[in-house]
Image (cartoon, rainbow, N blue to C red; front, side, top):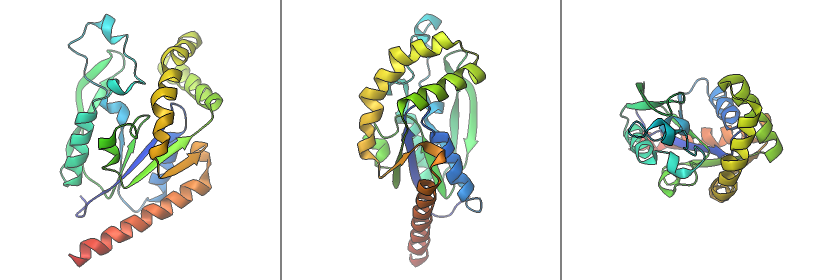
Length: 216
């Protein structure tokens, strides 16, 4: 467990933008540092009190779908060097699972999600705010392949969801949140130059934290 205050990095961007690739690349850059990744997708609201018909209507690309209160509470506890029980979401039942994942605070905590820059309470906790900016055609292709291969969905269902909820939410909430980013990375994990520069910045922040903690 880390003995100094962790640094918080937010990695946002639209669905299929390459957020996970960027996050994993950062994690690989710091193989000798402890890095914790917290996915906003794990913090969808519990819907166990709703009938299945209503759960099926959930717009998972809308800010109201997320339990940011719990996410913020967990980040604040991690900043106090306390472990937390991260929730698990059951996509088959469209509600939160009874399972949890115990996570410990680490030197670097990366919060990844489509709408993490949309909530001012979250951005205030971040030391570095990143937006992964990828063209819409690439994002829809990546989402299409993911949902078909990993979630067993049909092409029609993915496209209908994209038109009805994903695209409108991106234009209304996700794209505007880009203005709060400190760093914008075009094309996701393939942009090795931007990722290397980001890693250098993270290393600088870690060094500053070490110097600050040693001087106290």
